[in-house]
Amino acid sequence: MRSSAAKIQMTSFDDLFRSAGAEQQTDTEQVQDIALEKLMPFHNHPFQVRDDEEMRKTVESVAQHGVLVPAIARPMDGGQYELVSGHRRKRASELAGRDTMPVIVRALDDDEATIIMVDANLQRERLLPSEKAFAYKMKLEAMKHQGKRNDLTSERAVLKLNTRDRIAQDAGEKSGMAVARYISLTKLISPLLQMVDEGKFSVSMAADYISSLAQAEQERLSVWMSQTGRVPTQFQLKQLKQNSQKGTLDDETIDAILTERSEEPLRMTIRKDKLQRFFPAAYTMAQMEEVIFSLLESWHTHNV
Image 1 (cartoon, rainbow, N blue to C red):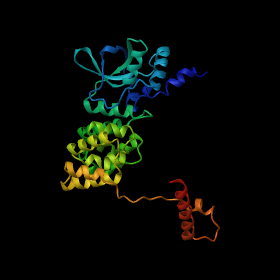
Image 2: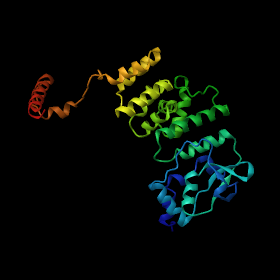
Image 3: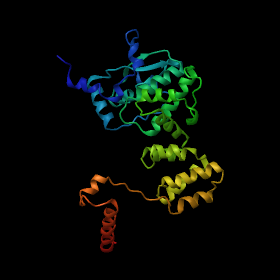
Image 4: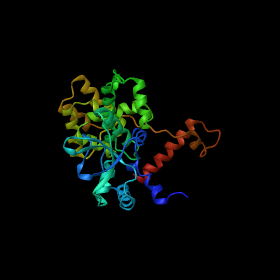
């Protein structure tokens, strides 16, 4: 007979997953119950531990069943341990009122620990762009230090295609360019990066335009957005980038670009099959356009 439904549900929680690297050695390593107070967070851990609905469900499961999948940690001086994976499990254990949690203690160098930490957390379903950005950058640097790709760099322009695609494949991204774009987000100042997390800027817009601006230029942009409550258009961001590259993007130019009305043309595409059902089969596109604008003029007269 299968185990209880509760236990099956437990394995679906993102914070109870373990990386492939974690699974490979559990047969030869001992699981220890370690006091939560001795478990330190990973240095510069890029992933947030949020007390959200998923955490609430995990706390309930941990309170009832305990932590089913051990965390991974590496020993530190003074009898403490640095968590490599299991930060959410630790938080759930704290909220569930537990004093210890099961941990596999493994001797790992910085690069090995970083790769395991990133890969384990990328299995979570909902990640912020900022989390992905710093995680990909950390993994990239770790791989470079390991010597697996001596030609790796965090700059988008010179990232090797095979390396980008390899990281993308591990992370479930569509392409290596997507990874490169995320890494570019690490160049953003905190207020602008937060706006990407909030969806005010798309990842592509922020990576392709804003990340190329100098810090002072980004700060001026952030201040303008805060004061006006407006978000610049892609056309305006493109102008900012072009002037920055020319070395002509001073405060006066920034204000002029952001305050002028965008001259970017308005484009709208309507599928032909959707239009044709409203017109006789013999109508040409020009005739359809004439009717559409006639109706729009009538609507404008009565409603504006």
